[in-house]
Image (spheres, protein in one colour):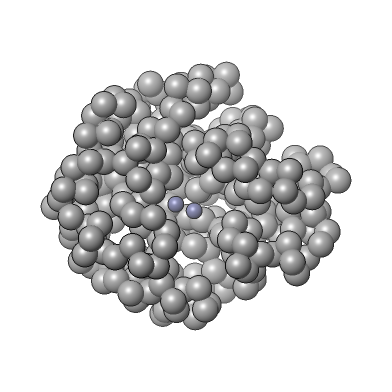
Length: 274
Ligand SMILES: [Zn+2]
Ligand SMILES: [Zn+2]
């Protein structure tokens, strides 16, 4: 089995409208790409901040600019188009009740939980760059992994998305002086405690860091903790469906992983990898 659950039907730009991209013709381009890549399970996980309901959770300027679409219509569309229906939900500290409320309203197959923001600053968006505010890389990494761990422990998500996203800029930002494993620890502990699936995301190959999310050391700590894994591309266009999967599957086998997580109606089962 191969899956691609964490993907987007459109680019991240605000002007990429639902009416233009949430169409059967566009979904079919993704479904065809998945069939060509031997992907048996295809789902979408649009960013929560594209939907008006996200403003019940958080009022960040970036969210206010992007919260345009109706989440119920999106979920309904995904199902009718032959896609598993997911959402990429940001963890926003202290907002667990509001997040749960929004999630409870929708009939989802899975929830991909992410951290893109530390407080008001982003780890992967240069308009709100956390590195402008916090110069010490160990502080940035510590805050990122602690924030994510706190979110995972709320038990609201099914998949821990791009777990070490903080490395996205690669050599364009300073590296922590401490062994990264020190920073990984709280998140790996939260993963072990909740049993959430750890996302293997080939998006990292396409970013400045040019490597898989997560790093080998992070994955090995997860394997030691008994974690399970999910596989996705985080594609924003059909061309990237299943991007780099051959390399990713080989890497996963090297970690000793032989199964991947499959989701339906927020229930998980394990299938043989590949
Ligand atoms: Zn993301
Ligand atoms: Zn994404």
